Amino acid sequence: MSGYEPRDGDILVTGEKLVFYAFGYEHPPGRAFAFLKYVPKALCGKLEVEFLPMSWRYGGTELKRPKELFSPGGWRAVMRFLKSELPQYVFSCPFLGKEMIAVPLDRAERVLIPSECLRSLRARKRLDRLEERALELVELLSSASGVPEEDFGLHGSIAMGMHGPWSDIDLAIYGSRSFRAVEKAVRELAEEGSITLDTSGGPLEARRGMRGFFEGVRFVYTAIRKPEEIRGRYGERAYIPLAPVELVCTVVDDCEAMFRPAIYHVAGCEPVGSWPEGLPGPEEVRLIACMVGLYRNVAKKGDRLRVAGTLERVIELPSGEEWYQIVVGSGRPGESVEPLS
Image (tube, one colour):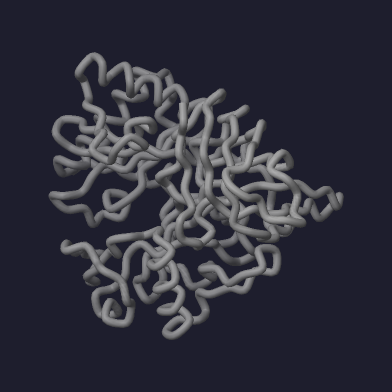
């Protein structure tokens, strides 16, 4: 693992055959902040969550996937499970002031990086139908958008070689500009009828436009920062939660809205209801940071948002500068983003 720096979406498979996905871009030395996506069936009885009915087989291990990956209740259940059974995966972060899932890199027996997974699939001579469709979709989106295939990656069960008949094609796009070009191409291809957008997830999913069907196969595409787009490193900032708040604001920059966390630069913030006394006012809020994937790419520059989340003070440790953001997906119930435009 020498020289490896985790990025959002990297897959880490541990010796226990737990499958974690790296989350975000600020990771402690020798660890990766992550969420648990697949669990060996033998351990499922110790994890108090509802699982999807299907199973996946990775090597000789049968895996199950929790039905809800990001709900506050699911997060607490996973933390209880890890603290009880595998405490080495729980990390007390001094810069966040709370316990987090953080995979020690020396516990990962395999790391799957989306760009490398796609290259590996291209190099194979024998492919099944779903793998063929994945490569055809990348070729189509690359051609239609002008984004080179080197800026694409492959996530999910196909990347792990454990896909089934129900599996979708889970693509990654590296870089905000490449993502915007692919996003435009997807909507144009949908108008032409080459693909179909999937809006079954409701209004937010329709706004995102990040799911669809190609040749009868469901696909999803998400974004990963290129190295030059990573805003900071672990330990450069401290994040101090202050209070739950609700406000309405205007998006002034959406160049980081497609990543995870999704970042919306905002202004014109106005409180909804009462604002906690003794805290900086809503006009001090600079960013909305969404930890929940559903809120990626739901708003563009100029849109108005209604946001319920946790007000945080952010301290730039090298300079001492302080500023404020609202986090959506802190683990508290009721946090959400609602586009008003």
